[in-house]
Length: 194
Length: 401
Image 1 (cartoon, each protein chain N blue to C red):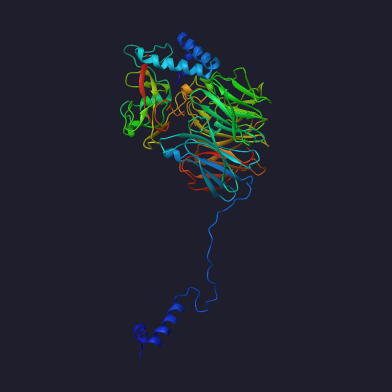
Image 2: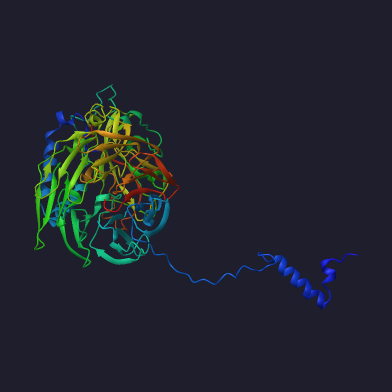
């Protein structure tokens, strides 16, 4: 889910959000294919150099000390934090596909014989256990055909493919060094929104 | 005295007579032997007549072993499968406007899940289902199939294939010469909605349309519409229907409908509400995510019967982020009056709705079991069900749609 999908973001969206979105849109709208790839490549190469900073958003469901934040969506209101083999596990708020936890992998691990995608789309899911929202990278595991075990389709913040950064239908297997064949989906935490 | 069969058949004459009796008794035609001996046969292959208005294509994505997708040819009048072709790995299917060819865009690897990747546009003869052309493409988008990842222009001379590798573009294929004319980049945009013979539009992340015109010199020029929807609040759904000349009805998550005439300069009409057309309040957008209302949803969630201007939409009751939930009813709207004219409850929740384009249209839905339900579209009466036609029926394609 794009953080900007949040209902209250229209009122409270941070300047950083707007700057980043404008920058990406300008880049996408005016750069050539080669230029975009070069910039994306440079950005991806630079990613490991930065520590994984928590992202603070005024609009996100914050959990003031001693209080539990309100679930921001119907899925979040019914999500659980114990069973990562079930579709209502909190991190799966926008997952679409087979759970790697049921395919020989784990919540952020690919099954043997497959490779994790270096690219993904990013959702934002609410953890009922600590009352915080987290950024979740839905990275696909690639190189074998469909795992065909537990299959989930959750759509919190899922947007059409003209917004690829928020779309759960795209096969995120770019650059895996395997065939771009989808096996299953992981849900790795890459930051906290609180 | 009585003789046993074995005793009577011990001498030569007895053996002859007994054999005659036995062969007569065992003959299925009885004593007369009047039926002719069945003739030997030569194996052959059926050839289909030209597609009628109710000869449809149905894509089965077979998600649980996705590289084995297929497209079925179905006689919807009799509920019979007439044939099938392969459609590998998140394939797409489209048909020429005259129904004289259909196309499958697919992806294969030389050794199943590895080896050389081939992205292909395959042209089929609708009579023999023979491959007429196996055009190799530079790439194609690998995504759970969206109907508008592949489109044909109004006279069938061009096919458009959406690519995301990972930048966005549209390959333009000459369907007569079987060559890729060019790849047009559509930065920040996706999908292909054709208009006329030499133009198409794509939907963009900022709520605009990118419009591509291909000149007689083959050069592509790009224009953008003004933003007409807010993707964060209420994006337009990919499977919105339209006509070959570029009249579109873009439906949003909440149920607003934007009538648009696509072109180098788009004409964007005033949005209207499905719910209001049905005498209900307008459904809220993402700013009220808990509000339950009747909403559009599914995969191939809408269809247009072009000559009558009737819009078929799968509807369900749910909250805002339920846009992929199967529909429990089909609502039919008059696109001129914006009023709901029919409400069709379904025997099973469906991810798809399709409609033929003739004067006696049929409507199609599917379900989790892979059944294809066939209705009289005008009365909403279920005519027949094809049990387990496939596994994951995601698209129907009717002649002329």
